[in-house]
Amino acid sequence: MKALLITPESRTIEEIDLADGMDEIKSIIGYDTIESDSIGTADDTLFFDEECFLRGTEGRFQIDTLIPVSGKGIIAGYDGEGTLSDVTITREELSERLKYL
Image: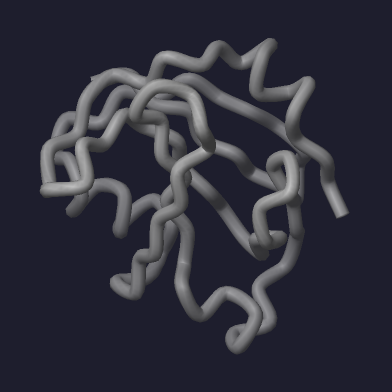
């Protein structure tokens, strides 16, 4: 499924394909402690390391008024019950709502 990877260290948004769902999200982010937050576009959800600030992870970003995130983030469609789907927001739309800190 189509997703967007935010890498704040390089200030990039990359379209990626998630073949293995949540396991792949954990692998890309680098930790098993995954938290999520709706970004308010259809079912689009931001996935990030729940303990990102405790770890002192490099690079930070914020989408709209959501809490800032440290380290990589992935946006994918999510129904809240474990089913992932294609992201609906485009890279361009996301870049307008994203700021690097």
